[in-house]
Image (cartoon, rainbow over all chains, first blue to last red):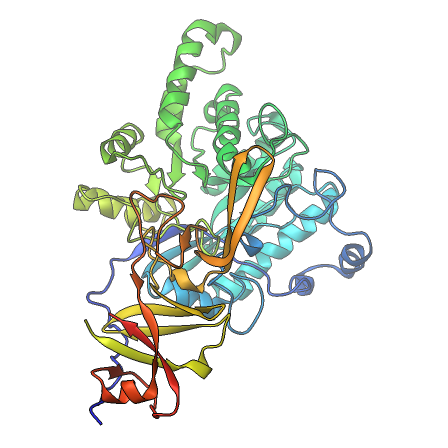
Length: 369
Length: 137
């Protein structure tokens, strides 16, 4: 017999400890449909089981378009103990937080009470999700920080929730979604901005949501791929509305974060706004400065899904306009369009810019530096 | 080239796959309807464990509304971004000019020839009576 039997190689040990990163878009999920019950009044248990939660769309459950992977999530992210992707802290730690050296992870829960027609149910679910974030996640892992999820269509109730949570330092931002009944600069949403400014918390606007309107500016498209690329136009509407309704002028300390809708469109939107504003500003006298100034001073951008032009110079030109100090690295874990931190930035970025991109901008914006 | 004995044939029936670490490389071996294929288990796009994804068919369309779905079970779809690769060749159907996943030849060898070598046996106990799945690295 001339068979060489050898020992299996040891699992590859990390060559060097990875540089710490901030992940500004992590989606924690509930393991079961009843996981929020401890923080929900009994009447809502019965309501959810007999009537259900109806969003601003046709009387159907679920998102308007089918997703590319189950639960829109990585197929390798199912926790070993069962439940959907993103529902286990220990597996999130083992698969993502530890190996990628995530020093700060910002939780953005989806499928909460946002976008529901029943505003009392919306408020109850949002409040329960906020308790749940603390109990299940941030109190168990100090790297994780929570978002104050608010009933977006009910400004005063949302503002009260922000004021109730603001003193808990585990919350680092207020979370809105990009699809709402009206564009986000409208007055019905102003109590949210007022309370966020007062609390010193930035407001993140994450892609998706339910507003009852077609998801593009010219109707319902045919395919999920159109929904995915349509997030940028939805976010442009939100940002233009925030500028032109005078939200940045009225709330001078308010900071906004555009989450998961790209950033490559930012310069062209700002140029177009400035050009139109030069000619039309008498219509909007409350917009006192060129729109690009509000955008460059008051808006931050998460990176995932990262812009990926064929020539890296184009990416660098874009970022030069936006500012290396304005980008917040995000993976979108456990969702399927996850960005791997080791792959998103091409070569040719200075150490200072790299550190800002991956960690320091987030620490500063969220007041954790 | 090193030849690695990675499984007894009985251990890898049609429709199954086995994950291995050969010479420090993550590799998956598939049995698709009695044919064996080996792929590097790392997606050339963003580095996911590609071979943990589902095996699907090839959807092609020459006209809007007319879809041909062929080669069922011969295309691997990455668990992250859904990039599709031909299990037979490693060819990418998303960006064929820029990306390819490394494919490794896999054969079945009889125990008698495995015993003669030269082969590297991972964790498989070899007997002359059986057939074995062998990966060429």
